[in-house]
Figure 1: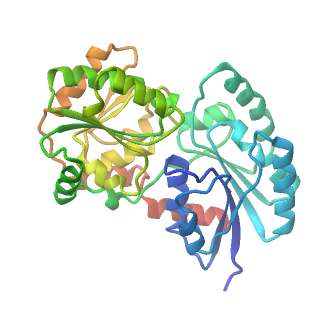
Figure 2 (figure 1 turned 90 degrees about the horizontal axis):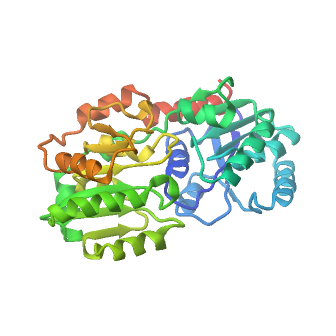
Length: 365
């Protein structure tokens, strides 16, 4: 049998969002006799035990805020583990990909930088990204991105990179009436029309807009409720805004869930007014579940592969957004998702195909 290939995935695996989901989807679908995927991740996370169950190791070290300690620590780690032939770095900005320097200087044969976002917030962050981008571009052997825009933002418009879609287990997210009934009963929303969102409570996801749009809808349709799935640094601000608008009794917040597919079945409309977005893996999941999706016009065409997507400009008023969401909320739609799953698979969002591709990359086939 061919010798096993060892890969170090550098990624924050502390939550259940896009990068984490991508890595776990690869891990669950590769040949573990051929590959061992180890992880460099700072916090303890919800997937740690599952990673170990596949034979993977989890290494901890200083954050990138302490760059010199991080650089030295990664160099030492790679020296102790000469079996590692690929370092795959997942980042939302070039700052998060500076580990590529340590991998390159350690003589790692294959260094992959993978862009999972196409923007950041604040002048300081943008300046740091622009500076770091100059360093990382010469430190990798392969460049991947979740979308064309994410690749151009990370590497530059003239750079050579390959788009690797954030694929999922599409059948896992297929709509189920029984799931819908059980979840809605459990949450006490059997009779409600449900506006839903899955995403981190960060600036990018625009929760202020979500709550403002829902406030308008709820004023006309008091039988509606808002289901938010996700946590983040802005959670206190989100809770304050909900309370300030008198919506506490009409909003359900679930910090994290390993059963997002069940919660999607309970929703009637998926609201996604992101300010920027690498790709939006939760939109893939929502389409697989057959949910009408009202999204901002910054969302990439690569993910808008079904008739369920309606794009709306962020320059439109809250009233205009609310009317569009309401129209979708009270329209008749067939939630049977097989046709949508077929469209998503053809567009490259099938996890089995994507994992096979990554396995071939890691094993240099």
